[in-house]
Length: 204
Image (cartoon, rainbow, N blue to C red; front, side, top):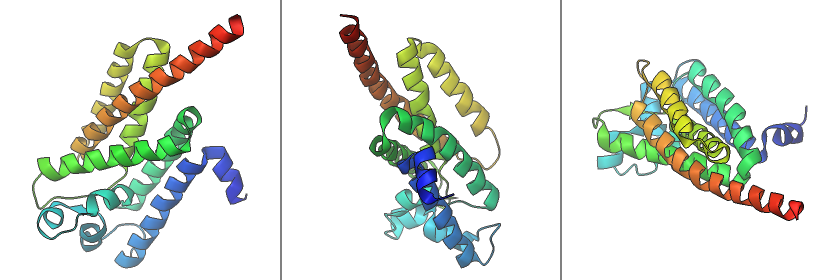
């Protein structure tokens, strides 16, 4: 199938973010000379090595790290959920806002990681950004459905289930989720106002 088909199916922003993640992983694999597991040196260069950010001037790493993955399972897992959740969110708020949610959530998670974990830590992955997308979806559902308490409970359970596994960056997950919920609350209110206005206009 053509590229245009996938852009239409998943949304232009979501599928473009998917392609960027896959392309970055391909570069990592070439640099590591291993398609299945990325070397520590490559992760320290392209991911987020706290010491490099704080002391070696690698200020770009909190941004680039949200597109970097540590192995083939990691990138496949995150790519699947990006396509699944991102496409749903893009239908609700549009492509530009999806990109904003991805970047702001991912960056927040990585900055929290930078300041709340040891300097020698090397982290990578789109999980913070994906938790932001999930949090945005959950909050929008809560606002439109009128039950934010249940939405917040769902968000907490999602965070808990996915953050108790070993070698998982729970701090990035938390930062992305909180930002996503806040953005989702804002977008949800806007969507609800439009729906209310449309219903009132049609009714009268």
